[in-house]
Image (tube, rainbow, N blue to C red):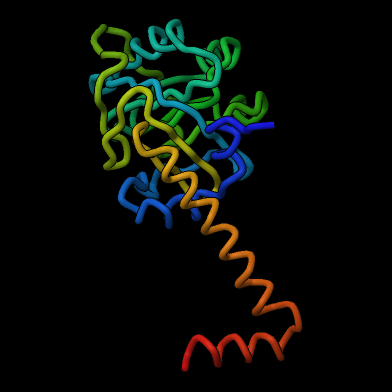
Length: 206
């Protein structure tokens, strides 16, 4: 059975993908998963929000396809949430895989309870405004990285990486090769305990 791009990405740690990309599209480390077990991999649907607003999130949910990840440029605003538990349940109900937010959400307990992956700058108690504005589908910047709708997003406990759509096959192949190389190195160094560790260190340090 041939695995899809998303299935292959889900099987890879972000650390291997970062090595494959040279780290050039790693999202800022301040954007973290709100639960350690959250793992996402899929294509981005981008949202740009005016400061303190969140109305365009609903528009994006209405357009979303199953497996999409909403990538939300909230300009780093940590005072007002881009979504709460109701909006997260709407997104989850239409098959959205998760949110990556350069900003904050609220209702953290509910997000964990419904097991909806959110990667953000944290949480707040304040709701976002709905005065209008915001765009869906254009170029955005999240955690210092440019993102277009259709780019691939991978996130886990170590962070979030954006992969331009045109590069995804090459990045996956390089990351898979890195994982195999790391497994071989670990076996060489660790399979006999101290003896193999010392032999490995002597080899790499000579």
